[in-house]
Amino acid sequence: MGRIVMAVLGVMLALYVVFGLVLPALFGLLKFAFLLALVAVVAVAAVTVVGKFGKSGK
Image 1 (cartoon, rainbow, N blue to C red):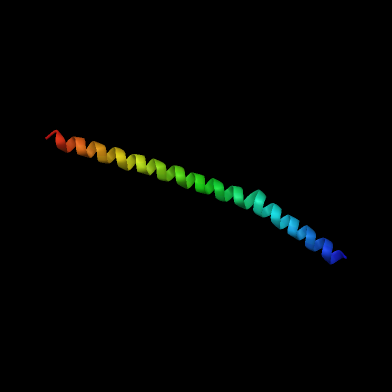
Image 2 (tube, one colour):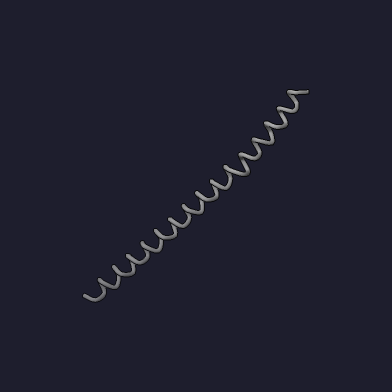
């Protein structure tokens, strides 16, 4: 009986850790990576546009 109770508590704790701690951390990391990639794309586009306008003026 004690082993069953401890197993159920262990499963509940594991689910809490996965859904309460691990998944939000992963989603936060993915959101940060997405925003970083978006900033990088905007920077590359800005440098490309400025470079093309700089060459056309000569």
